[in-house]
Length: 240
Image (cartoon, rainbow, N blue to C red; front, side):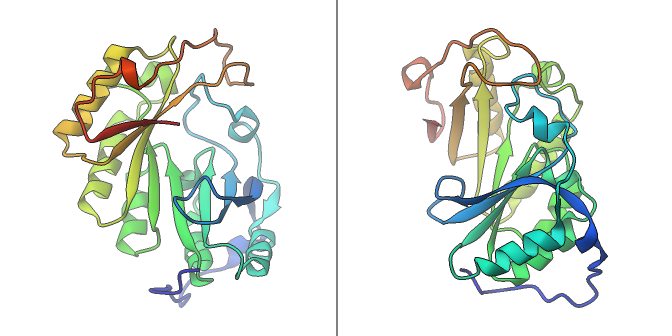
């Protein structure tokens, strides 16, 4: 575990410990935090309703675990896990997320946040207080299709989150889920161009939609794409 730069808990109100915001959690993963062992906290609720979302039960669900229960679990894994992944749903929409992350960070864990990019004010505070160590930022689609895909008007907020991360020293990645009825190859090229214009020189991760999943909206089968279909105009597109 990382024990450097752990925040103090002075002036942190811990009343949130008796609240529920976490729908479920994955106790162990080697896939979600690069080169680290981690657990994943799945926060209930989301302010986007993407048609292809694999987690409708989380997006429309409610918290099932008290924050205090999660803290007890994490204390029992203090020498077994390196990191905690905050995911969802959208973890940053919860008003107690900052004090909770501060508490988890104080236990010595690395913190990764998976976010849809809709909460730049929260992200800015987390960066300023040095509470996060890695971020995965979803790039849902080009500006012209963003609302149709997400059912929310957060494209400007996504750009703000990107700018915050780009200006910081925090390792981060940008990722996109590809469904052929929502995006096409021209869209991916346009999204690459946006990232390139913004100075992004890291890996761009694309996940092909996995057919036969329970999703928010019924969708036809997606036709997957691969590296041979994509013009590489940036550092590297990596398929997951």
